[in-house]
Length: 190
Image (cartoon, rainbow, N blue to C red; front, side):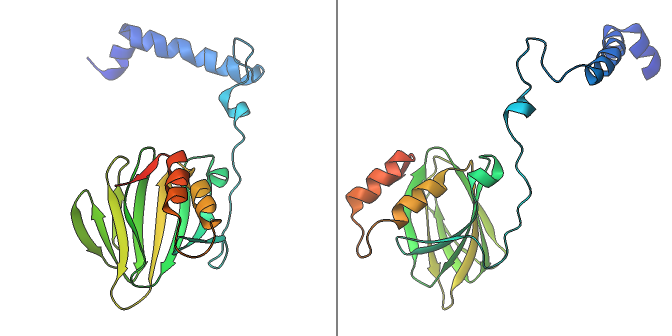
């Protein structure tokens, strides 16, 4: 049986043929759903395109990690945060676990040692790694040159934690305060 004949003779074909007039009717009616509630596209305002130049963003020093937040949840409708990191050898973040966020970490220049779930890898310029939520991971800049990396966090929200951590007084971190701030965002050190 040919496809055209199959569609004509089956309920699927009848269903498809009956949907077309409904689609046309919806185009001419108001944009309210049948139950008079607004459509989802009317509830959530779509974000506008945003251009962020190389030297632009929100620059923070988060416990020694030099970050430049390029896109926040406010820019991406809560979908992700994008952070550029620029650090000298020796800078790193100890093992930690995110309960809510997945991360993609891409090295743009320099070398970064990543440890994900007990496996250590040296990432070179152009390499990237995916760190799923719930999996312990850490990173540290190694080698002789500064490292530049792009960190994508899905979904957005951790930029709030980074801002709170950056507002802590200079000097050795008060780990009790650091742990409390991170705990509010469901991030814990392991």
